[in-house]
Length: 497
Ligand code: HEM
Image 1 (tube, rainbow, N blue to C red):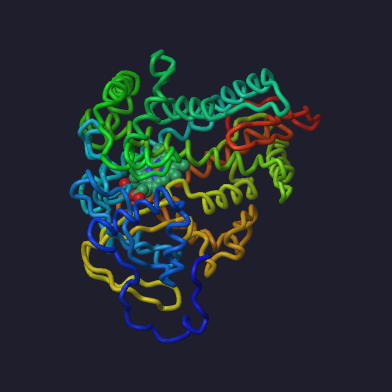
Image 2 (image 1 turned 45 degrees about the vertical axis):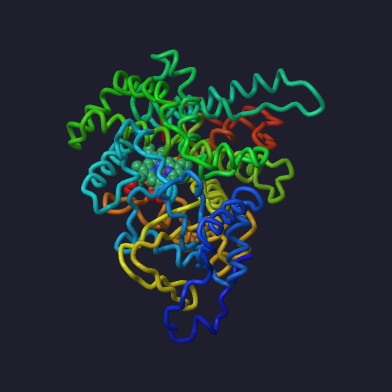
């Protein structure tokens, strides 16, 4: 549980800033101890919860891995922020600098991005940030026409593969794992929609593109992730030194050449409309495609599918979602669900928001204080932050803040429905900003904030277009009940709504 603040505290006059509780421990030993807790003895969640409870504060000092012995020059000391009020300081670019701090004090380096410092590592005060962010948003805007159609094509391919696997499966409880088909689907649809490049034009890319991205992503982020290998092997082999980028260069350059050749139109658009040179354009395209989009969806969509597909379905969610999707289909038949159609599915959308609240795909957010400032939390609690200190916001706790959310630990699919639900959107932070603000060249909010939610809604809608019911266990489908044709549905209509 998070510590709560009493109503009397919130009513009283603003108290003066107090020192931030917690300590970094003795040099080297303190950081090592925190690292072992983080990766070995505690889960990430437990790490933050325990410290918040011990210090009776939602703002506290701790070390964050990676650290020691070969992460030279990386300072693991951070100020952890785990409540919804203080967390908002991380979105204020007058207070925090986001330079080279995407995954924390450790930066995997430009060796992974063809030598370019790509957009996510740029701070809003760097002029190049505006250029690259505008390019990313324009790219999404351009792709809006084909996005829903390509997504459906990808999802159809994925579900065809899953159905075939499930039909072949034997044993007491047949099941079909959907991770590989889902990743293929995400990769293919993103290449086509975002880059205008069809992977089937290059056999190697089509077959191995998503695996290359998986390895490329893993090498960058594994030093900061617990994976659950046998200890102490994981500590020795994965968390003790930066993983080398050269291992993935052949794969990266295969994708680079693919974008250069088959995504030439997008590369040319970057130069013509945004003044971005070819090499930087391709490296930024690959990062947006591979890290932001492929990485983000690969983490988030399985959470969503697994939650909705829970066999027990305690909230009776599936029948209600199906009814909502089918109601839209009654008007539009089998037409592709476009951006407008999924806006007519409030429960589907609220369910997606709730999943983003419970399982934010990018759980940690970092920022370096630009100046000395007072960090404010609930109830007037205030903490003095010094220039140069690193804030580390942990979203899964901030978005379960009992000061803001009723039944914070429960998955409540209808939480964001109605006027009251809409008000809560200001506390939904998955995109590195409140759900009620918009990404812009001058901020660091996810460029695809709207598109991500719409895409997740489209996936849910596709599942209920195709199936009357389904069940999922972990990352496998265990039951797929095909849709029985309803007499009231109009014949297949063309085009997206
Ligand atoms: C589930 C999918 C996604 C998630 C969870 C996600 C999440 C995020 C988050 C948390 C950030 C801020 C990182 C930080 O600075 O701390 C971010 C930034 C960004 N995202 Fe997304 N994202 C997703 C999909 C996408 C897609 C599909 C695109 C584009 C096609 C995209 C483009 C970007 C860009 C360009 C930035 C950098 C913003 C800036 O530097 O100002 N993201 N995303």
